[in-house]
Length: 174
Ligand code: FE
Ligand code: FE
Ligand code: FE
Image (tube, rainbow, N blue to C red; front, side, top):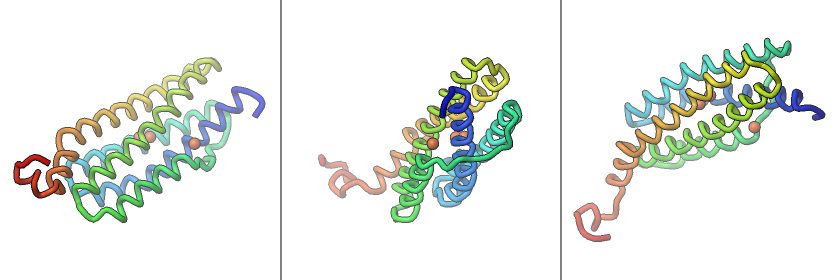
């Protein structure tokens, strides 16, 4: 990789691969979520992710390249961890907490990528691409905030209450 332009293109391909992988994972997560609010949050992000894939296709068009993903081992690993939780955790409430955390790991990966791509697009003088990355970056950040709120107002509380040690559950000191 000899130029920032090439690095930019490779990174667009990285996040394109990641978004498509996320688009396949989210419906499974929505189905497996036991909290209706968590399922709703995942479902809402499916629609947003579809638009994000389209924005990336617009970026490919701007650089005159066919949309093509490049394997991203980071997102593969993050999603694999999430799948392990979905498969291995038996308690519904604890599994929801684990899936929510896995989803936040995904959002954080996306936030780093889109933040970087927005800066690089600016440096490369691609103002249309800056706007596209910024729109997606805002959605990923909002999703992360929403998931934190949901974790702290519902999901973590239920997981803790459902699985607390008996003494604590009875109101005693743990
Ligand atoms: Fe995304
Ligand atoms: Fe990657
Ligand atoms: Fe996302």
